Length: 105
DNA sequence: CCGCTGACTCGCG
DNA sequence: ACGCGAGCCAGCG
Image (cartoon, rainbow, N blue to C red):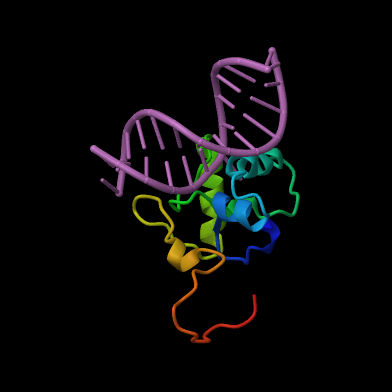
């Protein structure tokens, strides 16, 4: 599921849990992502942040890395270090109108 | 089996 | 917007 997150977009632990059919297994998602810490697994783990648009890592050096990777994809952080999920979030919040702007993804 | 801990989230104040 | 407490799932001692 995490692999489906488009470049420059971010999702949340809760969203991933829900999309995978385990709405309650939020913490398990975090556990899973933590499990691939190390050599590159091809999973864009850095595109997952918490529901408040903030990075949820414990080690500061890792926080810096994740932020760096996201900024390299064009994700913007506010002064308080938060990401606007309405702008960079994925899946995108449904807009009331059926306006078809972008395509693909 | 019990209890604690952790890349979490939600409801309250 | 921030801090708390409670509810979550998986692992481990």
